[in-house]
Length: 318
Image (cartoon, rainbow, N blue to C red):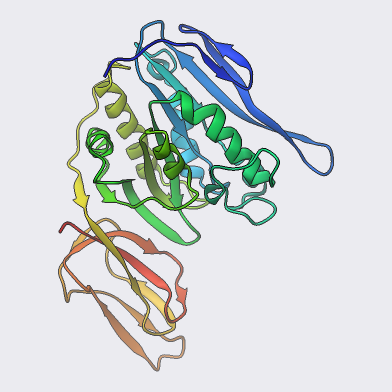
């Protein structure tokens, strides 16, 4: 692919090749007249190359992804790329980050607000700014997330397997699991796809908890991908990636205390005992068996569960 070294413009500020800058995506006012901004860091080489977006904190409690981006932009090879441009947004949802919550103050999920509206709600205005200020200027992006409340996602990269460009980029990133994941309506990834900009979603860990092994997986994956793109000269050991074509959740058949006997990320065999549900009074115990051959790609970490709750996320190769 041929890349041009065009000037970038974010919130009216021009960033020329060879320059670095930190700008605000926009400013947003709270009821107290307090101004909240979303910082965007830009690192540009004088040499033409891809414009890569590294973003995290779409949900305010996704601390693992925020730490991945922070570690990346503090590396001199990333902040001084050999070619191309790095656009980094460590914390998109600054409001939720301040409160330590997943969603915006009005309860909306920012990742369901795209393409947004410049005169809409807070989430809709942030989504509008990302759609018009960031997406048109990038060539590809990595969007870092973690599991929701009490869900621990094993390091995994999500993309649409039918998109040849996305799956090739995902293989170069080489997370432990690469999962075929359809677009979700009104998400950042789906909106970027409308502009033919591939965005890979990295999931690792659970909300409001640091998982340093998973953080390292995210950092190393980005370094592998950027090395492949010629943006940096850093060799990172390649790790085998398993392609997951289909996933399903194993749900609790009874309420009680959930005991998982398997480690996150391992392979299992259909019919294998992988845990049990007990009641607090010693009257009931139910074995949990693997519904199919596959891999555990996420586990519910909460010990108290209700019937129907998601317990484990299974990934299957075929």
